[in-house]
Image (cartoon, rainbow, N blue to C red; front, side, top):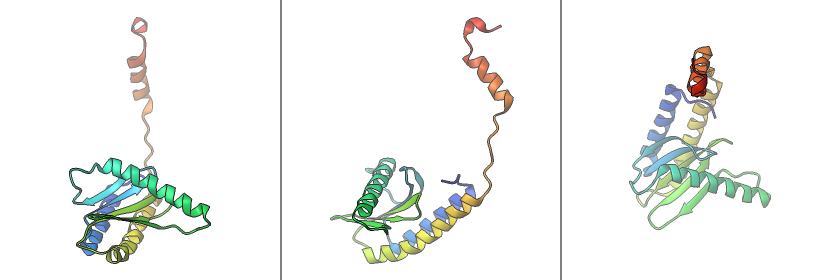
Length: 159
């Protein structure tokens, strides 16, 4: 995954805000394939830990994608879970990220799917642009390594 700049993070947030407004979903997460949250927006209930939710969602999506592949399905881009009060739609953004949308009875799956398609394209473009931006290498320099030797050196060896 690219390192997100302030501009890229702002682009992701704008895409999520627009998507939530149009779809009337409750909240949305952009999750990288390892389960880390790249961005989130909406009203996440206090009873939900988004970090755990994103890790579980990434695992579930990866497992279902593999099941689809095993039965010969080469295209797998979305997973829907329907519950009594909440529904979840997980949509692939690219090979490295997914969009997880949680919505309730005030909207419909069709509306969420319709607007998620545009949001996925917009988010993919932001992530692709962030990937193309030059990454600033971190040079700790000799100052840091010299100081770290002092810190980790045995006390009897200090002068």
